Length: 232
Image (cartoon, rainbow, N blue to C red):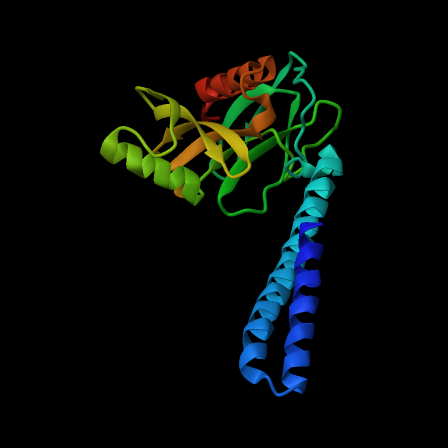
């Protein structure tokens, strides 16, 4: 209703201005024309704002009705974690390094240069699948490498959660955000493995698990993997 008022005022004032101009009363007509033009401008701006508001509202409605399965991170497993209570070794054929993990995690082939010794949560499958989360792997990507490098200098790193210094092979264990996920990892420096100068034994899992019993189970799985990590 408020927007309509401006167009009515604009029509009236512009009409009077035109009438004045037709009668050669230009000086009288100019104020009417200016005020009419001003109200017409306000009307068009109000129309634009209303259109923009409707577009935003439509987008928000689309977000609300969006399938929650599609809004989750790609391949994220959000069902409760259930272990098989049997263990096997995930081993690298070139370095001979490996770790022990519950058989709910299956070995998967990694095509990324920054990831080795990959296994993914696949309790009902014969093999793991790269890209599936939760996953465990030895990682050397920037998120891990820079965190370890910073820790070596400052005994901490940006974004560290529950950081715990360690003795022995591993420098520390900690949690941090990892893109759209959470990561719990053990940072280490090991010259004997070519691809692991600065690396992490990393567990990546959906943020939905944070603070749940499933997160505790997953962290225990990685703790056991770290304890068993060695050359086989």
